[in-house]
Length: 162
Image (cartoon, rainbow, N blue to C red; front, side):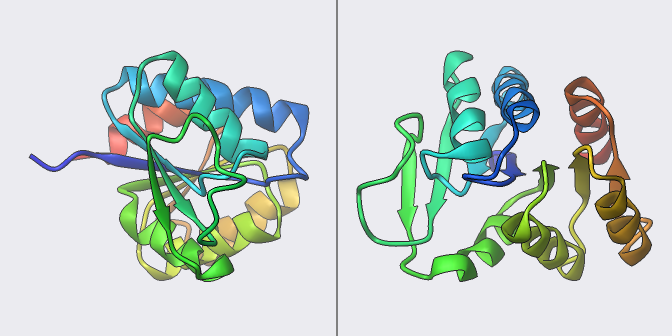
């Protein structure tokens, strides 16, 4: 049986402390649910925090890296996929995920949300930015879920998965 991949996308260097706390907890709960965590794999921001959270709960982590260098990979990534595609790897992130959780918001995260909407993927928005929530919900009201907490995000994932 194929493993369920939950993509957690979010800002790197621009992640807020709130984003980092949410990402860590998301990683923990994804691992505890028996799902595989998929991130951008770098050792910064939401990617790193989510991977660390998943590892703290003995989960499996997959990182889709933008380059081909070993430097800059989160120590909590179990499987590193080197793409040498830069930001184009965002499409791989969303297409490979069963559900995408956007934790925080930034330009890269916005591109991943948009790619997920175009690919008809379910996207959960967990951030404090009301304008981004309104914008993305207008793009795809039937595929965008807005949540206010990590526990609500995980409950939403469970309701989406078959």
